[in-house]
Length: 201
Image 1 (cartoon, rainbow, N blue to C red):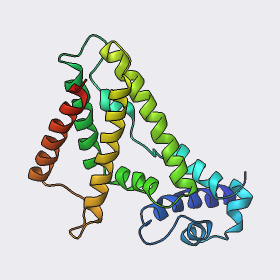
Image 2: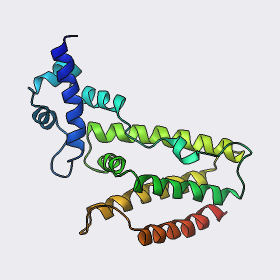
Image 3: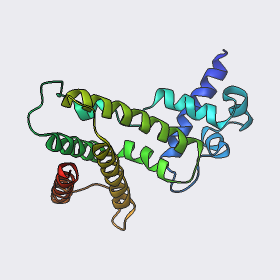
Image 4: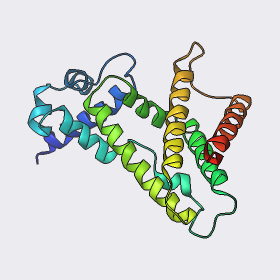
């Protein structure tokens, strides 16, 4: 591969990230990426086989989803104390804090809830993969697989948390950052709701 091609490919991959950060202003298209990179759009087809291939390359070098290990850190089979509902609620609170502390990741996840696109489908695929890993890990940690009730509860609350943070970011105040009081209120609401969800049988 020539140095010129390597440089151009790197610029195009970087441009994908730049366009993602401005998805509110424009869509992720081959034209937008090429314009941002300052290269001919046809090079996307020539070097990557199209926009999907370029997005896949971007995904190979950038995390498009959270890592399940972040939500189960410090937990292991036989190392948890407390009832299952409390452990599952703790995981949801970790998920909330992780997204609050990673606005760039939240911006990427926001693309999944936008118009159908190669990026949205790829993010959805990555998220589902990490969810599957998380749920499998929790089953091992808790000593028994998650039941359907627990699976639905986790998926529902994780989606609701993500959408709520996106809504706050897009609101009149903008910024997307929760102050300490807002975070505490949201944590309290999640704790109460999740305890009822996971405790109900």
